[in-house]
Length: 75
Image (cartoon, rainbow, N blue to C red; front, side, top):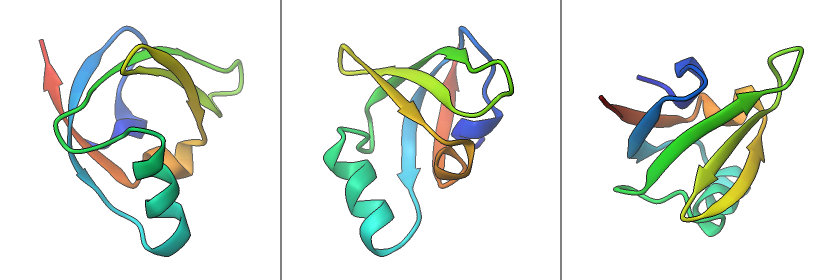
């Protein structure tokens, strides 16, 4: 599933980081690498951006950026 499709409170593991060029490099530099655990903390009131917890720090991503990241859901 895409990271942008996850609900608040869900946890997932990054399967693939898509995109191209500067966007992909920026996502990887922020620590969103294959195998990283991601917890969806909350969505903004208008559902954009979303706040994640990755490797112990809070990170906000736009929904269109999150749609480039494929995750496996952890139950």
